[in-house]
Amino acid sequence: MKRLFLFIVILELAFLPLSAQNIRTTHFMQYNPYADLLNPATEWKYANYVGLPIFTNLSINIENVGMAYKNIVKQTDQGKVLTINKFIDRLYKNNRLNFDINEPFLTFGKKFGRLSFSISEGVRMQGYFFYPQTFFKLPLQGNMNYVDEPAEMDKLSVYAMAYNELSFGFRYQIDDEWAIGVRPKFLTGIANLHTKDSYFKLETDPTTYAMRLNYHTHVLMSLPLDLVEDESSVSEIVENIFHNYGFSIDLGTTWQRDEWSAGIAVCDLGFIRWKNHPISYYSATADGGTFYDGDAFYYTGIDAFRFVQDKNYIHEVEDSLKEYFPFEKEELKGYTTATYAKITMEGHYEYLPDQRVSAMLRGDIIGRRFIPSFTVAWDATFARFVNLCATYTILPNSYANIGLGIGLACNGFQFYVATDNVLAAFEQLSSKNISIQTGIVFNWGKVFSDKMILDKEKAAVKREARRHTNP
Image (cartoon, rainbow, N blue to C red; front, side):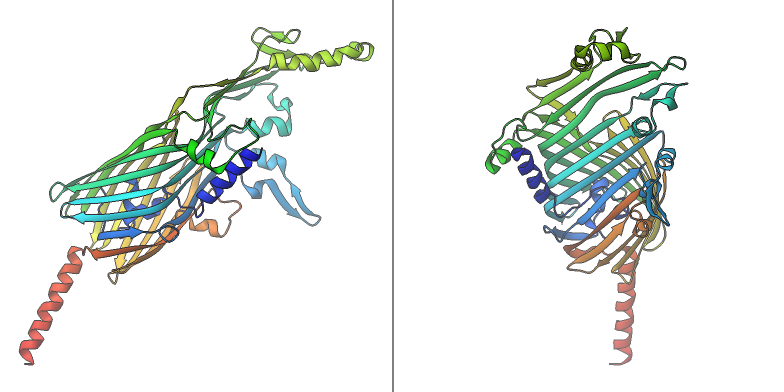
């Protein structure tokens, strides 16, 4: 337990402050250098930028599609009461809870003519919990809700990983219309939890109410410490972090002609090989004796007469349960998991100089699951340094996601703040999407738009005309 406690403390220190990488609103803010995180071919509006720890990118993004505080607790005249039935009824057939946290220690970008180069180093932590309504309904309301149909859980799974990421970004402007981007990433795994397979089925006989249970689950785990050992040290844990290596890549391209532009990209496409204390946990229904029928645990009840007359009977039943539900632990040489890839397709229309509307389709790939989303956005630049952005995002079973972003893009530094769901500020405990991203980036060498250049040329002509008029 001491080793586990020490590891948790190290993780907490490593992931403060928090900064998420997948906030959509920031992607549409043209003067934010982190707009290229979802497409490495996205152009920066500055020739150079530097982001320092703590100041550069403070944020957190959590998506909770399912559980809501307002459905669990109700305020009455007598106080707060639990509303279990309402909580169960408001769950979807399939629900999820996920987050993506990225703590960059240093970011840097520079333009060399048509070529742009960037480098970033930091720690990422991602987690996804998928669960069906049955996960809560069965234990809270009992199996009598499943007399006419079985209680099944074939989509219960957990995916989580923490790793260090060193990336090198390259963007090249091929011609006036096309640009390409690539960002290879060298990964060092810290911890992983991966559900390889999971299934649960409970049937209740409508006449005898006998229960028939069949299940199996297979989970892989890798930590930088052995949970069985009692002693630990910081140096041992840090050394173990460098045993898991991986690689991922971001690829993208953009096209622009007049007021129209588009882009397509895939990000975080890669893998990590986990070799530090890799363990396989497996459990499935097995033949344990009396209560086994076919391929399932078949429970018809306790023999009351034997329970009273035979003192050893109840002990036999208890001792045999581990035979019906065996738990196997196997130490592996290693295993490989894929990083959680993202695919994006986007289009933009600049209907006025420095004002545009956009749309983006995005899909997140987690294990064998796919999470689609659709975002529409409006962004504009005023007074040459104020960047505003508003978004609306549709996620599976989550539709009230109105984002807002503002950036003060001065030449020398930029302050920005963005969220994918501004409504969450008014209902933090019930919102399905909570996100906030803010920071300061030091940048110089501002790339002006055509409108800005035209304004400067007009101003120069007027000054020259006044000079000749009033010598």
